[in-house]
Image (cartoon, rainbow, N blue to C red; front, side, top):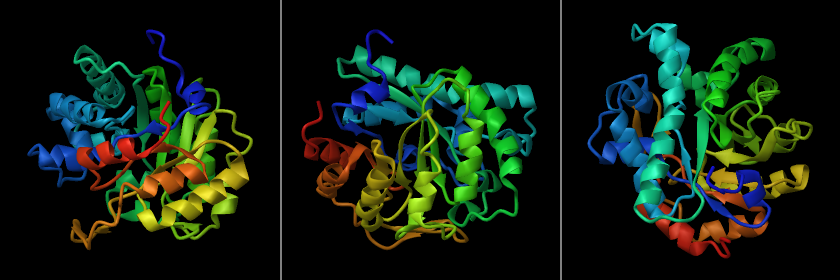
Length: 307
């Protein structure tokens, strides 16, 4: 687009800054996201708010906007009475809203390349019961592939720069996602939610990352929605196993209580940590839950060189 290099090409020579948590930015703007659809509800009800949230991160120094598609699924929208055609339109619109934010950012004088990552959350996000932090849904790889493929086809048709297969708790689901993106013609990154050196479902990260070794669509592997303390070790494993760029965007360090739907604890994400992650092999670096624009600005200033 307009001479912008592909994200894969950019990663060969630079470190790319991701945005922070979309939900916490929307909440900071006054939006209630306490229902099962989370930020995806605003795709239908207040899409302009999503544009403004993405724009806040571009202005903060992010190079990549991760869309509001994490919890946007046919099944989730159906529970709200939306038919498949309407749901498809909303899922695809998540990419266009991020593109609109990029257009506005450029109109405001931001001249660096800006990219859009189409978020595709795990099966557990659709269930909205906290199971995305556990995995092991009782479904086969083939069943999970059938769940993911239609949504990924829609997102790919909307032409994002990359598909963000994110917050994946289970290597079985990663295998399903890797099958589902095959042949879509859009690059992807695969990002696990982890605890220590294992997936949330308990598989060793060496094995989990190795699943993507033969997937030509995958331009980066890594971790997100995890404790900052778990990142550096995961980056070292991913870099050793894959030999490709590594993507990392941890939470603030606070802990999510899925039953109470509240955050506990204190922030442990110090922007200076990003320098160590970069040195270990991370090339896409940002934040996830509870990480806002101020922290993204600090991370962007910490990383050197960026171009």
